[in-house]
Amino acid sequence: MTLLQRIIAAVTLSLAAAGFTVNETGLPAPVERAAIMAALLVMTPEMEGTVYEAYPDTGGVWTICTGHTLGVRRGAVASPEQCEAYLRADLGEAVDFVMREVPDAPLFAKIALADFAYRLGLRALARSTLLQYAKAGLHELAARQFGRWMFVAGRDCREVKNNCGGIPKRRELQRQVYMVRL
Picture 1: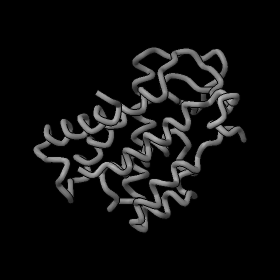
Picture 2 (picture 1 turned 180 degrees about the vertical axis):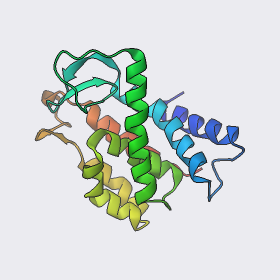
Picture 3 (picture 1 turned 90 degrees about the vertical axis):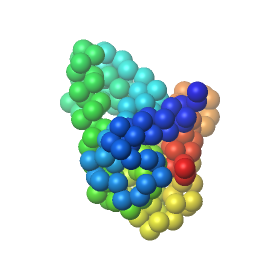
């Protein structure tokens, strides 16, 4: 089963547990939020990995656990429980931002946008053409915008020598998730 299939399955199961299907519109906000979180709890750890000791990420930002950066310093160590709490809180912040900013976007578009916001930050998404297109309902154009975010610390991650090849893979997955229509 591919990662995309597992993301779709997580959403489907989350919605089914609440008595809904993926094709329904007008989901209650708590149900939609839970479905987005279920998808991200599959997608984000797979793309990020989890490291219990602080390390500088590709851009030089001190990071711990599954991409947590707030207040992280060299030498910090976290437990699996701390990492889980960081991940849920950080993802929750991204999900809440996306749900506020694009309430009418399709469910899978919100998942992709929340993963993008989690990794690049709420401010990066807030000022992006990606978000403007999503708000305008121009979803094909919005999905293409993921391909513009291929740089880390000024380095093009499509070039093998820059050692950030996970970025293009993640952007492609975000684009694919954004365009899921069941």
